[in-house]
Length: 359
Image (cartoon, rainbow, N blue to C red; front, side, top):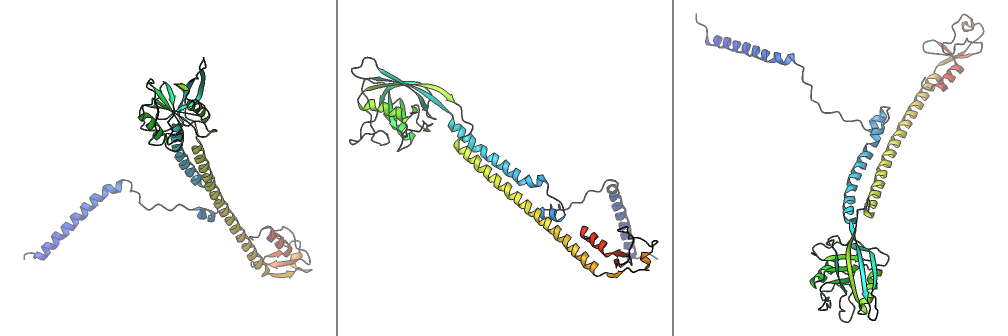
């Protein structure tokens, strides 16, 4: 009798299942020989200050100083930028200026020296010599600033090089220098407009090869007084000393001060938060101890009391002493009967209770 197709298919299916099981077991064997890979799980959240306080621990110094250190690092990194920028602007070259005044009717010329001059930041650091000229009056009014588009200079034909004398204010340094350069001046000397202020390092990008120097208001008005009298003034400008940048400018000092104040505020806030948590933890602990003490008093008050009388077995010298006080019972002693049928002196129990509220 031939086998049925269903039976054949059953045997084939069984063989395939057995073969699959063997292959699966063979593939699983190498995995069992090596160490099992660790399970991947989400990291547990770090306990905050409240959890640390509830657990009875104290926050470490590193935990308290963490935000303060990060804030200090960030503020220190930011404070380096303005220091670099201010240092670059503080670097300058001094200008040594010799002035020669040739007054009519005077044999020897008058000479004086200006040591407090300062080259502009964008000016060529070079030596130059020429006659000093001031702008012509505009509409009958003296023009000392050189900011008006109609500013003019009267240059005698026999003068090859001349230097413009202008006052600070009313327009940018670049505008003043550019107008003087338009009239072929080889240099511009700008005197300050405040008597108590030292010369500053002028910024005038895009003015070309013209030399720009600033002097004090006092020296500038001295030279201007000679020019207003039509007295010839010659000037020689020489390069002085290169002054290195200062460590801190006023703006950088203000920024660092503000950063320090912000850091102190952050640190103070963090310390206040820490001490508040500490106080809360201490209060919670005290409340817990008081609650346990009240519970102990309540439990003790419910115990049965009796007075030891003459002839009771407790007065027998061979009777067990109090296990806590290590003393024998006496007549008229008031004792409490504990749930374990053990006797304990009332006074002694109260003294133990006051010394250890958690009993």
